[in-house]
Image (cartoon, rainbow, N blue to C red; front, side, top):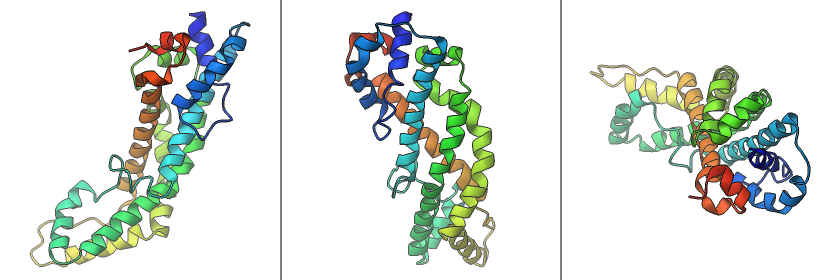
Length: 242
């Protein structure tokens, strides 16, 4: 158990490398393993180690999502027309409005990219409240244990804080107006049985948050599922050697 706790703390010794993923952070832990193993660790130090490692992963995920094409260029998290509007999209493309549909999708994703960085303080707050028992449960839990912890502890705050940010973002990038124009155009088509709701905020907010959690889960999986990232016997004991 002591070795496991040391390994957790090691992940917190490299916070200066925030531009790297957790796999790279673990590689650098090899250099400080000997020094860290010479002394005892307090519960506070152990908790701080995992919190700092997770914070690095969160910042990486948010930076990735917030970069140009962070959403638009990632097919896994790319925001598309709302499900109830996808049939509408198909019909609009059939009548020559494909370029407007493409423009809408681009501006919607630009809004998500603009808002992504705003999630960092909320995630960091959730991490700061993590107990030592939470840390150990994450370490020995399922492959997405850290992601699930963050979902449980930050989803409500994310939704509350993200909604106005996302609304402002999609307004400033033109997504709201474009979608409103598309909805208005579609709703004027004769014999349209179901009218399209032009309100985007709720859909865009939830999809942007979902996309961030996808990236967080990917960061977590790098440390759990990539044997190449486990460069010492000690770290292999923590997560398994596969």
